Image (cartoon, rainbow, N blue to C red):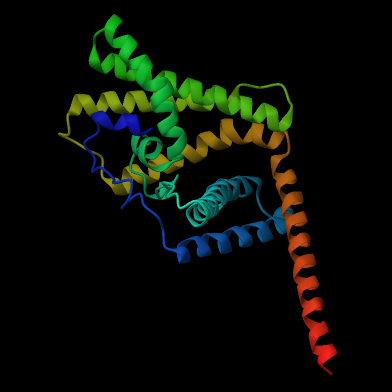
Length: 257
């Protein structure tokens, strides 16, 4: 969440430039990778389940990037509105603070900052007064709210009783992020883990905790099977449209004879 940047002395990232828009070829490559991933699932019975979950992580990121880029392109073409990108190369993250604050789902980050983080921090500052403590409390509360929001979304998607694993996922990340921020404050920039080490550790932590707490609920209402059926329906629709276009394009040639 971008509001977490206050105690972080890492290099800031501009919304328009470094968090900015990729070239169209970048999204084309992402679309190609997404199509290849969907094809790989045809051989899922020959692939280890843990590898499938790892592919799901990549799938979710690529899917959201491509879809949101298409929405942004439509908004720019039809309305002349420039939408800010929602992801900023999360695979280059250096810490949990960097991941949640500057790189992942930035629109939700900004919404939670305005609606949850800022009000709780201001209220806690009046009552407690301790700057670091109120900051940590607001961060933790923001992750709790984010977890409950995800539980609600998953409930509407699957209509299954919540297991609260997703909420626990965000609570765990909120706790770990709070500890990370406090450690950064204690060291005051005197020591920092090399990015080549902190980056893979952060990505590994996100993936492992997703395997443990996020994907069980995701798979419980068979979101993957639903997505594959929708992909198949979309592919059939595209094939029907292209075949009709080809058939109609032949009629003028036949009439000209």
